[in-house]
Image 1 (cartoon, rainbow, N blue to C red):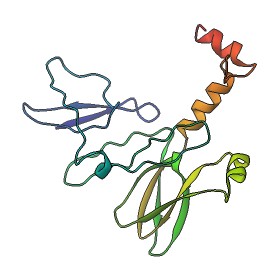
Image 2: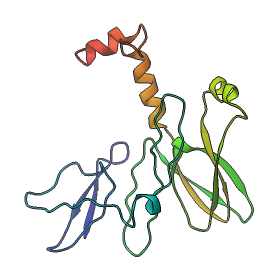
Image 3: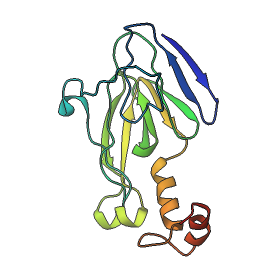
Image 4: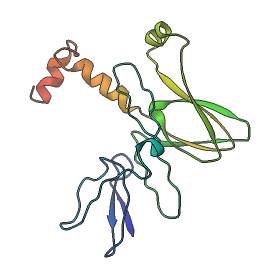
Length: 176
């Protein structure tokens, strides 16, 4: 397998060259294009319930993020929004990270998911949803931008039921 990272660092894309009968595994929505004749198979390794754990999100954002476990030997390609930052935790050291910023973490790190604020009213007032508490030893990779925050910002600008008055400018750009 040959991996060529293109358009670094801001809008990176991976071009993967495979030998005949060689395989690559990717998450849903990751493929932009393929050579003609490449066969694609969809599936859930070990079943949906064994493979994934649903994550929470900010308020107006749907549930549905997943933790995917990667094991074995080979190359792993990670895509993120913004820059990729790695936090190294010593044994017993902890950090709290918003779920929208978590990209990956090592198997030696323990994690728990929890609400940021105590009650529903506090959660709504804070605008925050769920966070991960990670405890080392090990590493946690984060993305510096949150895709849900970008989506919320765009929705506020768009005219219509969820948009604001600034939507005319962005709507005009997008032809709406």
